[in-house]
Length: 206
Image 1 (tube, rainbow, N blue to C red):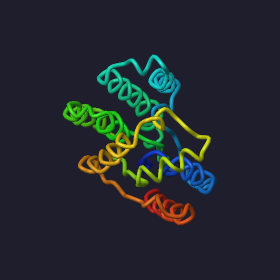
Image 2: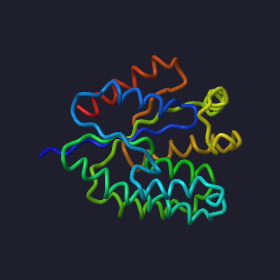
Image 3: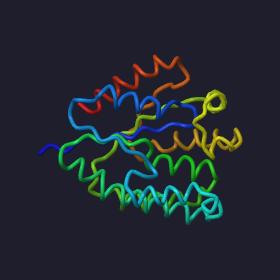
Image 4: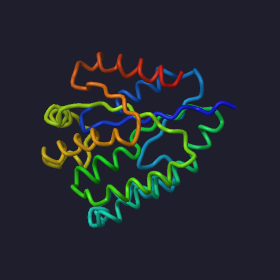
């Protein structure tokens, strides 16, 4: 049986990442099986870990503790949801994956000492997994944060300063050493971005 394709959608704050993915899920309804999931989360255990990471208690965790919790959630996500879906031939699209850990926790938070550990853990964790292709919605942080301020969909990262988000963007650029990344300019009109996003996912999931 043909294995499904694995696509990850990534982007900084205000890139429209989740909005376009929700729209794509509706657009693709009724076709071949499509599993849309998210990180951190996607399974009951991973969602519990997400709750801890984004709680007030989670803010007190060390960088190393946060790093390992993200990967613990990812391990359960891969074993429980992603790999079974891919093996039965379904396509999987995840709203964030390990590129977010690299961009936000390592580059954004300036914990570059974790890069070597990231490389080792990623190699071990992704062994035998269908290699994901990353679709990255790139946007200048100033534009992205401006959009977020006009939105009701906010999170703790919106409180970070502009320099943090610039580092996150740099981290996404550096992540390309690990995987194939397709970049889409998300600063354009939302319909232009949607057309690029839709046609890109159509090709990757065909």
